[in-house]
Image 1 (tube, rainbow, N blue to C red):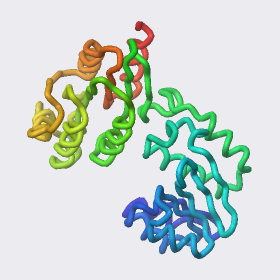
Image 2: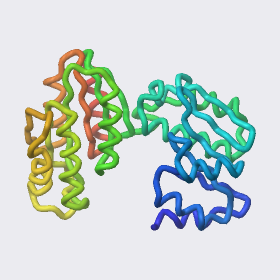
Image 3: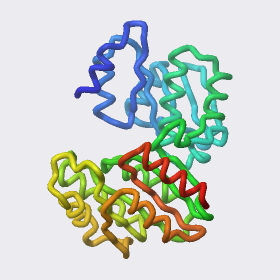
Image 4: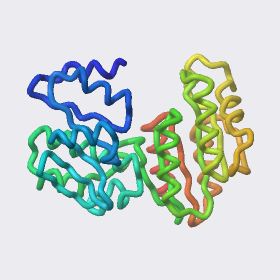
Length: 274
């Protein structure tokens, strides 16, 4: 595992922050020369429970709080005070907050500063481009993200399902350097959550023949349990404009961008036009 090299090079006096919900990541702890902080939604995860029983650092969710615990000491931070998580409804953002808390804690940053950072962080296109950037467009909700693998798509769908919407639409392409089954899997997941799907061919096919990625995305939608409208568009911005033109107040549109900076600028321009 290439990413384990980072953990293997933690200083003896340093700290690795590891996801206790991922067995592959948990195994990295054995190779860490320094200490480890585990984080996970569920404090009952085996690695978490053992670590916590040993009095070591863990970060987890308890009801409507994130808890940072070490031995008999615990700090509780209300999810309501972390806007990034939308009161804890966006699961992957809760994970991002937990890992950030653990990292800041490891650096010895004062808890008052950690709390302020969590309370004031803005997840917009300037601060974190392509990472669940939310826009309002004529009463509809737009979300722009750079998710390009099944795990990311599933996390996005979990988040979208917590957000009210009369109708859900997704605009998606696929990265050609992914496995066939991974490209199909993305739309298999989306087809059960979105009413309309707009497929587009992005600028760089990454070694794929013309139309090959689109065909795989369409294959993934075969037997979709929710998606009833499927269209194919050539060109990212044309696809985005097509989606926006169909939106009505109360709808939600997830746009999986390819040319991140240019696509976000295009979306911001359309939003500004109203």
